[in-house]
Length: 199
Image (cartoon, rainbow, N blue to C red; front, side, top):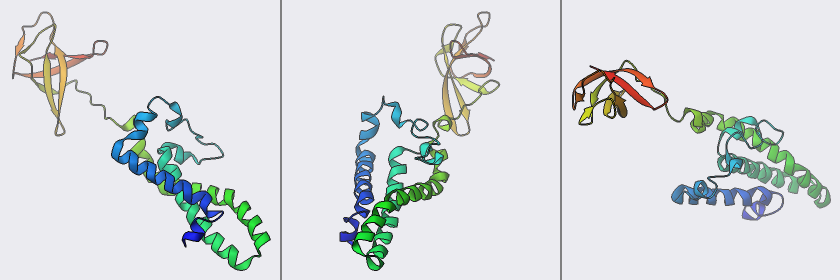
């Protein structure tokens, strides 16, 4: 079995698969890839062959290493069984021609198999849905800082089991609100990114 995995054309897929698995394991432990390629836009999900002839569109929505690793895995399986059957039924010269022709066919088939299997995982890697946005206007909160006045202050909002610490202010005409008092969030100052509160 190892001789088929390391023989042509199966090794074309098996060696990169092993290499990618090792890189993914090392990255899982040490977080090497994110640090090394943090500023490179090539690894952004939408920039790599999205919707082109090479990769199916769904593979551009998962990390490159995951998409290629799964693709090389299926290409290795396809090539392994194809090489085994070719060696049994076709002569050596014709077998070599069929094996060379099978490389792009196997890889393209593996890309589409991978796309079908990885499509349920694509939403997990969607960066636009990474953080939920909560509209705090109208919610009740408690004063968290010593007091909230027109220049500074903090409040805590409890929402769906989570605590949010927010910057808050009161109107100039209102009296400062002391620590621990219940308040209502009236509005959001989008420019300065703080909330106006009132008792």
